[in-house]
Length: 534
Image (cartoon, rainbow, N blue to C red; front, side, top):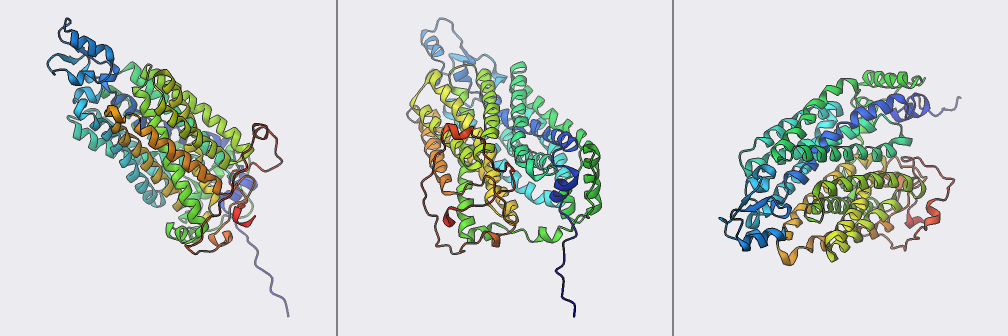
């Protein structure tokens, strides 16, 4: 009687095809990565234009005394603060009413809170946009969602530039936030998914440089055309023009295979292999529709003690890092120095932060990098609340440096902590919570209109970021290990009563940072070493 022979696997996933024969980061992937990531530039412009469209005209000095001999008005004019609010309204006027939405619609003094409300409303739209993307991208694909979002963002930007009143403008900005968030996620997915798993994490961090480029382009536009309507109009044009590049970009092979369109997935891989001067694998691609059906949601993670703890801590990190980043960025408008110079220096520091994060991540892993970044951002926030003038601006830039790195790496570390079958739901939740943190930043900045509470936002952002950074040391280090395929592979009890055990961290020194470790630097193949099992 013949013994039964175990069935051998005779098909491949897209990642296995990229690793075995097509190539993980060849010329084909690099070219498509750049084309798809260009979509992040106009999407970032829709966000960063709030730094210039909503300038506070009293702090910026965009007003003048009607009577040059009025001593009380001249004294208030020299203060460059909110002293004009204590003057009779008939003794002063705007020098350029169209410079900011605040001057055009008198969002000053008692109505100054409306200026921060419109920024918070934009991020509220981003929260909805993340939800819309998660639903549409699984049915329409990344490419179609990117094209539709870009066109919608452009049209809404043009409509915002012609808004007749404040409430019209705020409603349009909410819709713009929905389109910009969906466009950002679609562009990132389309750029990163065709890259092999060894380089995918690095590509995710590298995409931050395209977002920074969008901020620099916005500064240039605001400097050359300072009117808020001109800035809004010009920032919308790249969104409308970007879909012209989409015919040169193939749809994500992973998504095509997950919806049963195997022929198109093979054609996409063949195009990448041709550009890489490689070949398709000998084994066929497998059917991943069943694996897609096995994807688990948030409820599974919440019922699993280990996953729940990791998810909640990383959601706190995402919210706090985003809150510090946008809080520091918006605060630069009110600090010493020209607003254009402050923001340009801020984006330059961000690029240095992202580059340093890539270096540190390869040496020490994501946990140490994210922890140091968010702790630096939180400490800088506290120092901002205790200082003023040029020194406060230095601390704000330092906080932005750390927060930008934490924002760029938080989702990568979250993906390394979880099993493959829950990553999609967890990353979607992290993207939404990150927008909640961004929305909280301008909401808290409403308090800056009160002289007695001007430093309160810094004392909220700082301690929460520091607390979140300390919680990171309760999570395992993932450097050089592999991602479990399913929740069952993680092991551990699923009782909701189980808690994490506190373990004091071993803080790496400066010498260890530059030590050449004989460990794998692959970003997505990480061995999950849990402190509970040591």
